[in-house]
Length: 231
Ligand SMILES: [Zn+2]
Image 1: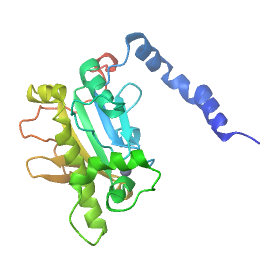
Image 2: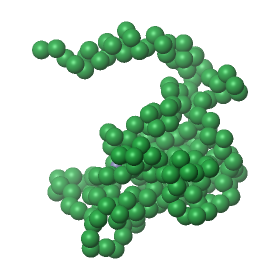
Image 3: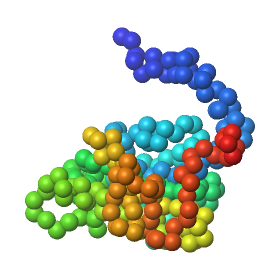
């Protein structure tokens, strides 16, 4: 029986890779210098490269159930997301952090419902979204949408508890962006701290601000300077 996945790997090597070979060689020779840490939900319908048109070397990705940021509370467990945040900020010196939630998020829905009894880690992880919940009995689409957006802002606030993040945000060398991607519309709504609302990208004048008004000016450029012919 033919293995489709193997065919896909071979197709990448034979057909797609040649077009990127020079870019990857530069990224290997000079190392990676991504400008953006993207923290997003693991949902298969959220495709950061499609949303941003990014290519190799442009996004440092962390994905988990819900796109949550764990608290910076001094504990040192196997905190993969926290480790990635520290690495991106302290080692890679990223210029911005994007937290991206989305419509129809299973993690947000699970906040209001049951999770499998066996899923101990999942239950514990979902606590990171509890504060975003709304005290309502009817779980309609609007409640879920608002909870998804509140969860994004909650993660932005939690990011500010990371000393290296807070320091750089206050020095205006790092900006934070909250996004809510509506899958069925192909529209990212960006958090605007001045209005406290999520604004469709087609109407917004910026790609996200927050959680504080005194945010760094961000030109939104994804391409690392060493790969950017315009830099
Ligand atoms: Zn999700």
